[in-house]
Every structure is written in C-alpha cells, then in structure tokens.
Length: 62
Image (cartoon, rainbow, N blue to C red):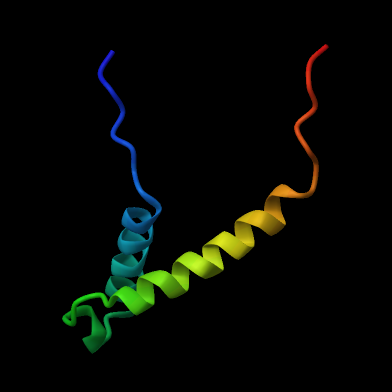
C-alpha cells in the first residue's frame, strides 16, 4: 500500500480559507492569504476540537 500523504493543520485551514473566499466572491479572493488569518482560524478550530472531544471519552476494551 502507498503511504497516505499527511495533511498538516495549516494546509487544511489554508484550503478552507481559500474555499470560503471563493464562495463569498469577495475582492479578498485575489489577495494572498496572510499568516494571521491562518493562525486565527487555527485557534478557533483548535478550540472547537477540544470542546467537541470532551463529551465521551473512548472506553477501553477489556
């Protein structure tokens, strides 16, 4: 089997940002994505993830 390419969080966020810009059809779509935008969305995604996980811990099989 071939190795799956590991997608970094930044790569994912980048794609997401690009897509949202495309959908909004704003003039921002032409400007390059700044690192500030990436870090901002990264933080919000991280916050959401930690909140999401805590609901039920994974039970160990005996």
